[in-house]
Image (cartoon, rainbow, N blue to C red):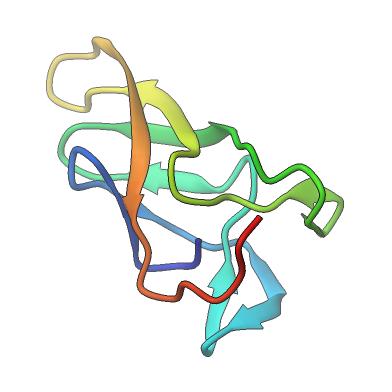
Length: 90
């Protein structure tokens, strides 16, 4: 998963491992920010534990983001659903 990845609820995932580029985009890791109309939070869970970037597991499709809905303040958990730079299979 890289910057411009999108969660199932349409929220953007921002890649924070700027020293690791995939197709020119920074890689998202656990603790990468997620922001959008349905969830404002961070990537909290990933199944890609063998591929470390900056000491953190790389985020991938189905990584879970946890945060709050910006409009209501209700806690939200959503999976990452779309990545524009699929290059590695974890």
